[in-house]
Length: 270
Length: 288
Image 1 (cartoon, each protein chain N blue to C red):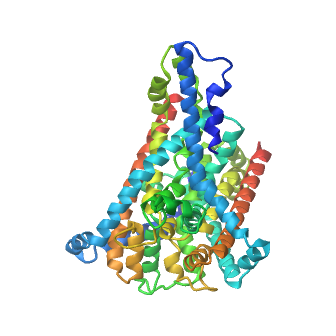
Image 2 (tube, one colour; image 1 turned 120 degrees about the vertical axis):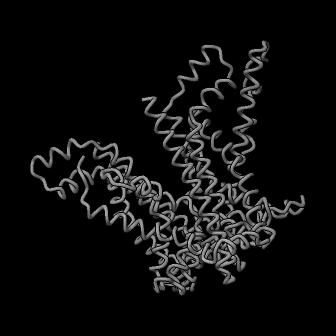
Image 3 (cartoon, chains in turn green, brown; image 1 turned 90 degrees about the vertical axis):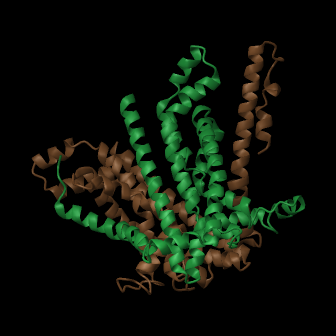
């Protein structure tokens, strides 16, 4: 093991410390600057509670849908390859290269009044933009590839001889899927789910456009934080921000566990 | 795209009607699989493909001239230029810093390394708006350090540096981990200085991964909004990034102009991603 120069270690620690460490400590310091009592009162702010509720509801709908799609599409792309799936494989990754603002804009162009499906939706009486379905769609769009990007490489690496063996031994397809396929991709999926959840909870730009940002109606927690800052109510904003920061730290811990398990499983297989 | 499940319907393809129970089950399974595929394609179309098609249509529905006029407006050019300059500086700094961080994480051993490794991912997990308000308060008019960089390219660049840091680290780290010491040891036994060993042996091996990571960081930086919008102050012609300009166009009813600038921004991002990836692949192939 060749050691790296001590200077380099110190430089890196300083860089990460200033860029990530200081902001992280700062958000906690700001949220608790007036003590726990004030923090507790701020937590019971009606507008913020509604925003938390809405964010949770959006995540509850968007995350399972994307996990279902992500796992299904991965199986399709890897196990039933065709010219079509090669195109699909590329298209799935497109949302990652698109600015959140553009995501909001394109959804508006199709689903808002005057958009492509605007009159049809109006006739049906479905309000998509500036309401719950629009927020869910924007959240799904921005987090679409996060599960499949974890699962596809793993499925490719694993191959399908275990499934074939099970099938030769007479196991039903459903049993093969649940006991072999699903079990082998559990941790990769868990990793993808945490990334999806983090992205959905934290989305700002796309949701800002499609939701209309109406307090107590379509304001998610990120929008509530932004609104509090725009209204010079930065303490309330920091209370919301620290909640999201804590959520992302918990998700990071889950990600760490998932990656560790994944590596252990790979060592076992190798 | 709704035709996809119909095409997969096995009855249409079966040469003779299925007779045994086993055959029937297989037909059912293929039918279900076809339905699932159709559902996946519909999901992708409704959410991604149709909206993107609408974007391109809206950008060009008054002709190429109006598209070009919208993109070459002074405000648009200024916003695009500022975005690219800040994204370039931030990605360049992070290419170097990310390489150094990956190096320290893989080749060094010290107390607290696990925490460093975990904290690198924070910008991926932390909502952009949270990063935005933190940086605005840390380096804004009420800064505890008395540093005010709001409304400047420096502020925008710092926010982008935070958001894109993990990309380079996480793409270089696994390659560095899998690198064996043979060539490096041989070179240093033959009297090469550590700097020369790094420059001629280690760095070329890491280059493809470094380029891929930097490309991803650049693409992300170009579209960044939540972390930048607070610290930038959004002054037109001066500190307004492209996504912010698109937002102001979209919310003031200038949908076609918004779509035009968005198409320009997307094309720039895609071209850059392709250039970075092709260069990385070529480098990797030359080494193999």
